[in-house]
Amino acid sequence: MCAIKRNATTSKQEPMLIVKLDDKKPNIEKALKKLKSKVIRTKQLRKLREDKHFTKPSAKKRFKKSKAIYLQQKQTKENQD
Image 1 (cartoon, rainbow, N blue to C red):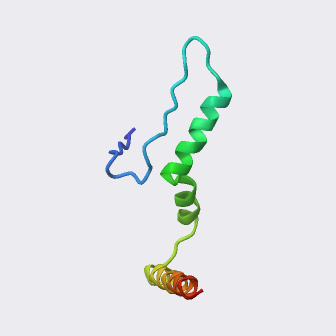
Image 2 (cartoon, rainbow, N blue to C red):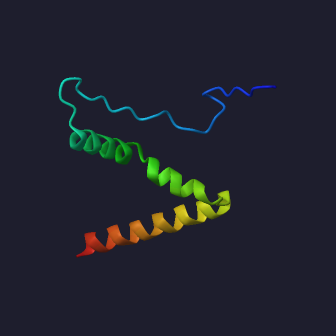
Image 3 (cartoon, rainbow, N blue to C red):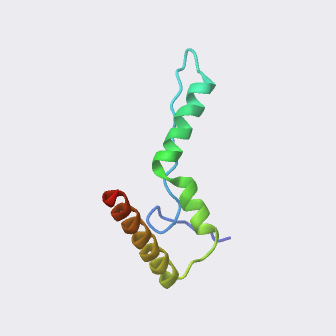
């Protein structure tokens, strides 16, 4: 048998999120709240959803450009009012 080893640099997986609990009195609600805030802060769900389907680089550029145009128009409209 041959085992395949993967380095942390070659795999696409992000480092694991770790939430430490008190040894004396672990509070599950606080731990879940910390985990949720870490997931939001590290944008893991967004990355997961983006990686679900392949998007061509040109399509990404088009989307980014159209978003920038929209935000600029919105900003100029607010400044005029």
